[in-house]
Image 1 (cartoon, helix red, strand yellow):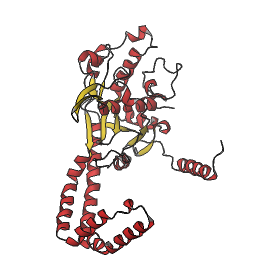
Image 2: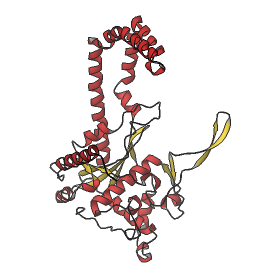
Image 3: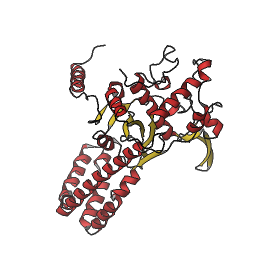
Length: 373
């Protein structure tokens, strides 16, 4: 199939941009970097961290709409325990190797992972968005010309026009109310308030991103609590839900926070394939429970997509009674496992590999390497 010249030019220009903007390998002195996990080489960063007795900690982040970001920490020793669990439950694993797993690790991994959440409501509260909105509405009440102009524009929307005469008429209505709206919204006082709100909004994003990095570097779940940490953030590439058609939510997105992270730490953009459909302990498929709801006078059976349930009876979470978990937390932990396995061994853990086959689902390497290449 032949491509158009415009499409070929777009592909060529994209390849040139990707080549010229290639991120250099991160080091301990300059860890700031943002790159796809497949192209990221952290061998030098890990080796330098080991030389100065720093512990490498991975952080998995899943973006969403209601909850902007859900982040979990994954210390490197916990990663190796997870790989042991995968080899234990893998259908192609050797039985002699399966019996060598440490069952004490299963008990610790059955506990729910601690997470750090960022919601649009938190940012609105810190940035005083509601206060600025109420102040604008209060000032608008003192200017009846603006209220009348907005009401007139709402009643004569161009989207409601059917004929050309209606379009010209409604366009004339817009021009007649243009000066009143410009005097109000482009006043010097309103510009100053908007400038203050933008600066405060930027400050809040920086604070939330800093708290997220501090959570990853926290030593609560690490064996070597006294050692300093080298965080590596692994963020899902499925998007930030900014363009979602679901109404009623502030579409802030996580792009600003990601750009803030890459100024301080290494950020790997990780493929989210199967991360929300896989148990993070036994790496077998999960199910979403179905519940009965009373909707508009009738009882309906609906799927609770916010909960992930593992039905594997041999899974440590099933045996501990903690097999029902939050979907975002489960996905964030699987994103961390998928990205960490790719960085440490050069290939993604088979449950999260969209090109896996029977030839690469055998025993996964557990020994840590200093890099992917």
